[in-house]
Structure formats: C-alpha cells, structure tokens
Length: 145
Image (cartoon, rainbow, N blue to C red):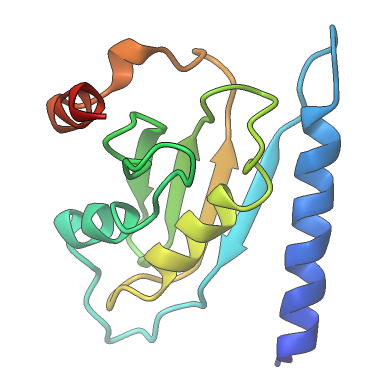
C-alpha cells in the first residue's frame, strides 16, 4: 500500500520528468505519463463517459479561465473493460508553465469518479495543439476576456 509520502514523491518525480521534457529543443519530445487511481473490484460498474468528461472539465488552465477539455487539450479517452482509463492530452505549447501539474490534475480528477479504475494520462505532441481545437464554449469565453 502506498503512503501519502510515496504518492508525493511520485508526483514530484513526474513533475520533474515533464519539466525536463519541456526543456528539450530541436529533439523529439519524450512521452510523459501521469497516473492515479486503483483497480476496480470485479463487481463494480464502469463509469459513464459523460462522468469522466465532467471530471476532466473541473481542471482549468490557470492562465486561461477555461477547462482543459473545452480548450481542446484532451485528444482521446479510452475506457477499458476493467474500468481503467487512458487519456491522450496535449498542452498549448511545449514550454507551457503549468506542464508539470495539468496532466496529474486530470489523472487525479478522473480517478475519483465512481467506476473508474487506474488512470493513465499521456502527454502527446502530435498533432500540435491549435486554436481550432477550442470548443464553441471556449471560443465564447475568449471573446469575453
């Protein structure tokens, strides 16, 4: 069983790994993954996708008051039969100042949804994020800012 100190060390290591990846120039950016959650019991029902998306929408980019889902940073959500979730997400730029925290925040938010097992959030760089990925809600919010 992991202690809270172990979890803090993993988060610190994950953040350091991602921040190191952000400093890479003219090289292929490494893959970064954030983890949260635990295996579901055999008799538990899997979460509904709408609940997973709603959880992701609680994570906001602190520089832009828009959640990461409506920003278009979530590229793919896969739910396995055992309740485990794999999410591909990107960042607005490789040098994003909150790169070390957003993927872990997404993993943590999804992990607390009833019916979700282990969560893996992988930062991907292809295709690169563009403004075209914004939802209509996000576009309206940006117009108000």
